[in-house]
Image (cartoon, rainbow, N blue to C red; front, side, top):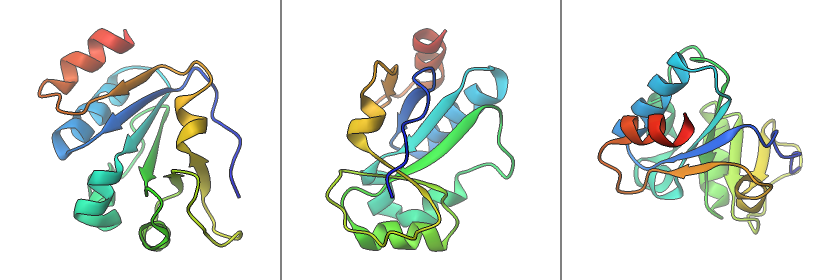
Length: 135
């Protein structure tokens, strides 16, 4: 069920709140840089997959993939599939059915392989951080 990792040129941006998600989406809309925007497990658990999904734009703003980090909670992962998430991330010990119609990555896969990672945890100026780090 785990998918091959995305190409290493896809930077990983970890968002923890709505403002950070909006900054990452705006960055993707104005830059031709392939991104994986991962919604943190805290965000996934606090508001659930429905609330996180509501933060996504209706159309992709560029070469961007949105992923929800479900931690190791199979209930969150299954609910995420029900509400339309197509890319999920787990800690690696989450037991899920093999036939889920999603791309499933582990955190080890996403954070490894020399990928550029921008974790916006506690960042109050996410737009400027993204411009500075990903430029």
